[in-house]
Length: 360
Image (cartoon, rainbow, N blue to C red; front, side, top):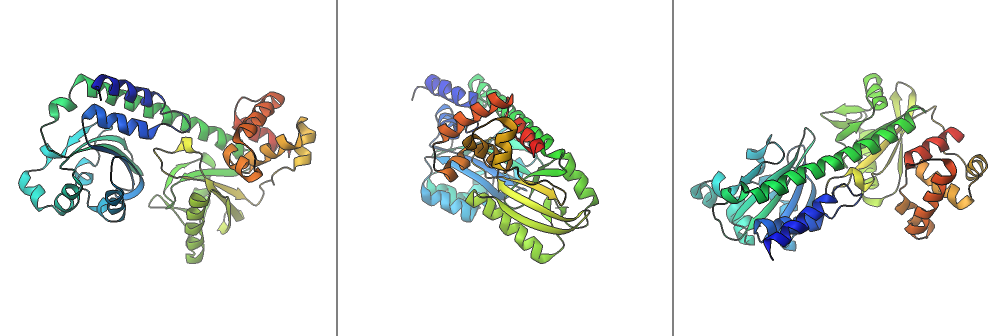
């Protein structure tokens, strides 16, 4: 493909990174073509080496399976790039000597066997809880520093960082609205990985952790001193991530006696790549119940179908999840959302939730 056309397509994909469901595959394909590689991957790791997300173009199913099951822990790019600034590029051809590579099992037994003799990697996210990078694989190794320092690649890298920053800001605003909506009712909100690593905790959650003698972060992961409760928590997070259904778990021993954790798969706009995250609500004993359909209809002059959509939002469901549960088109639900916003004088879903909770 023409490099200029590939560049335009890549920049177009980057321009849509702040969409709810960005064109990640188009981005990978574009980067592969701009760099001039045979395949491309996006890898997101939790706490250094645990795999959160693995996306690829032109990587064989066998190579993907082997990497996820075994070789991720031996990836030679992970240790030397730890702490590198986002936007930094690395080249295995200049990082490692031929003598080292010939004796390294990851390179000789995995990379070469799958036709990847060189990796060019760009760090995209580097934080205390997770780190991610985009890598282009080549079947032949050659010096690439001039290419990586070229105006073309600098332009793509800068656009990529700006696109990811826009996406991060949208996620921050979304979470801020959700936290504000539930804080008035004594509820706290957490964004966590399926393994329980806390990526974000609302002010209410931080206050709760400061006074709780039970549930709290330990080494950045949610932890409970009771082994049975800890097992139930781990199982609940996995189920919420995998099944797209809400999972409720009572937790005892906190500052208010009894709490309930409500866990559900987080909206895709909060994730990076195709990672799966879980949104957790800490509901104290004084927390109010979800308002009834009749009360919502009476309070806002809306139809029962619109009230069911509103109740689903309060319960933590996305429009797509509600459409699936009701057996209707997601376009129908979005149309009902538009009607709700007009009738209730709102411009965002979190405002609908706040008003619904107040009505109860």
